[in-house]
Length: 117
Length: 109
Image (tube, rainbow over all chains, first blue to last red; front, side):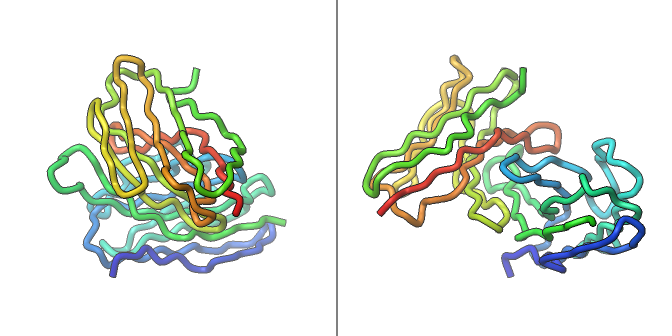
């Protein structure tokens, strides 16, 4: 299995709703990431989990709450979002590339396209 | 000044053309350079990576790094309509990927 699986693929939610995005990988990668991508923009890093512990939080608003229940799963809990939070949310995982201790090959999921109404 | 600069395009070429995609960067500490390809409605996929200066070839793709000029390039030979996608350069530092803006490429049959 060489994939990162994200569910759901599409999500429409109101500003008072609570929802969760899910991400799963079975490649044995010990680093997992959440990225946010707006149209025609590059992905922006939100959170990094390393060995199931949060290692980087890029000053993301508290209405986004990440969770890493185990080494294969990553969740992003959403609450009280704003319309400007509408975007493609990408999950990724990574491992060191062979022979290059500093290069990490990232495998991205196809994303969840979120619309906040 | 952004750490990584990339012309967003869009770039439109006829099938069979040689495509040149470029990025410049400001941080001389970067050593590892990557190119990702992103098809519409998909996540980015790693296309090529290089370390330090020099060239790397993989089939129709060649990645080039010039650290003295802080300039990296991706060349696509004999471009195909299936190469139509957004190409993102990226540099890895401190546990993060720093992406360029992405160049939208369209290869017309």
